[in-house]
Length: 338
Ligand SMILES: Nc1ncnc2c1ncn2[C@@H]1O[C@H](COP(=O)(O)OP(=O)(O)OP(=O)(O)O)[C@@H](O)[C@H]1O
Image (cartoon, rainbow, N blue to C red; front, side, top):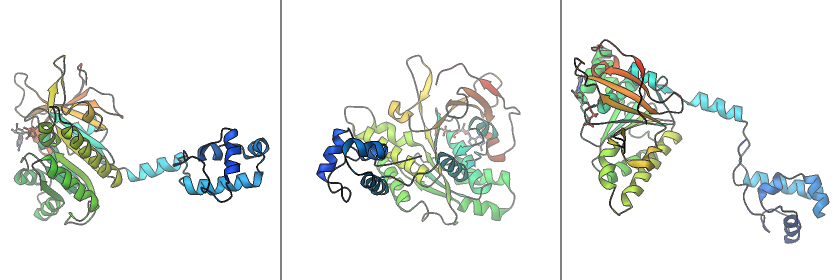
């Protein structure tokens, strides 16, 4: 069951008939808040503080109506969650395996990795997969000038030869170019205020919001003595969380990486940001001799569903239904710390 507002202090005027005298009598029995009153045994309390049982029950009914949300059974809440959550394929089977089938709506997922590790290619793959396979809208916010429409089309062409299907899919991907944190924030605020809908030309709902990359506009604002960068970062985080929750949308962000004290790779933007994404994948290049050029690893470094440190290898040319060049993809255990 869920309740809200029950920590309200009992005071005169809060409920008809609840006089100062009665409040004092209740306080003498350690009943100080609405929560205390509604969770007490009315019969016992009536005897202890000489207030009529009928009056106490009436107070409880009024106060519950005023201060508590309609109670909902846990099972109903769970059913609601199941029916409203969608799992969206990323278009990359190896990455889907790590994410326990794909991106979950209502959550923020992060791709962290160094330069050219395939973050943008994977974002393209997600956009194409959602627009073409799921026939849903995607809002793609590009902060680093990395948007490449011809690459999106190339991925679509690998999925369908029908030009009208390619056109519809491209229409479902709305691209926003921003170049600093202020324009990112105002873009997110505008999209949220508009209910994510006004921006879609193809109709239908928005299933994913992609920000490639958050670190490109945030990392330059952090550090030094000023707290402004941290405050802006947490505002961006709050907007993304609200978008994910309020519109039941999958949010995908990309981040750079740094090294910790032991030289291990870790996602950038520091401790405060590290709590923002619910799931994080670390992308890395594969440099072993003879490895194909586009071979990458994805390692699960944060997850509430799967064991962390699971790793998959994949080829960048394998995205969104493209032909698999490397010829393998396998799950492994990695011995590094998140
Ligand atoms: N059509 C393609 N097929 C296969 N690989 C490609 C294709 N187009 C680009 N690439 C490769 O993708 C890599 C770049 O990946 P991407 O731009 O996704 O990296 P990134 O992690 O976003 O990097 P950055 O942080 O620098 O933006 C390059 O190595 C490039 O060779």
